[in-house]
Length: 232
Ligand code: GRF
Image (cartoon, rainbow, N blue to C red; front, side, top):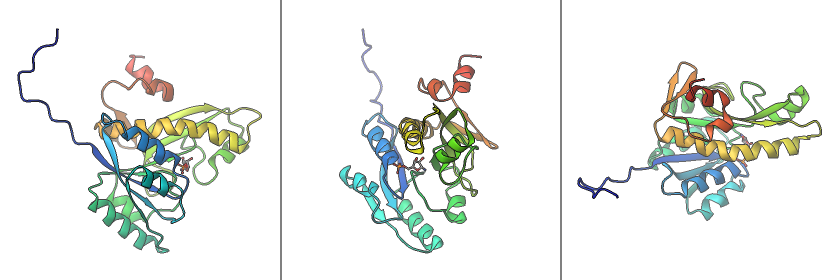
């Protein structure tokens, strides 16, 4: 039998405000929007910024009723200053890069240090930069995947939060491999943002430790975490 509540009713915890930076399709943005549609998810998307006005991802934000802006400034510094101001005005506490194809000003990266995430379609540190799926195929690797990491000044570098592994098949072309990796991205990014929002990530040097019991999905994505939580 449920015990009658005695104390004051627990207030729902405020959700972490997230800003998402995109340049194109926005399928990872969509995955985050869908995760945040659950009121129990500890984060909400409050602002989407694109550096390209024609980015289809902007329509996804509009459809979800999320504030969105296009900042197409040619100057990296001006873009960074305007994005920074918009994010702060919206009360953003975490910035997620989701297919954001412009190199960020180092001042912006420094200002948002440890509050700035990226997703990359390879198992970093392998295959940073452009066309990672093409690089993986050319290298003949048997597995690839995706990585969510904290952003540092060097492109596609920074402490790794979570990775998902997918097989690379002999008959794969870039499109097929990209599609397989993308399906994993759509599960991994919402999970990583959730871990951040729950305050469970501790950066120790260049490594990230996850506090508390690993979520069940992590066994799928990161075998070493599953082993650690099982005492292995
Ligand atoms: C994804 O593969 C992401 O990892 C990479 O760019 C792609 C963006 O796709 N950084 P989308 O715009 O989220 O659909």
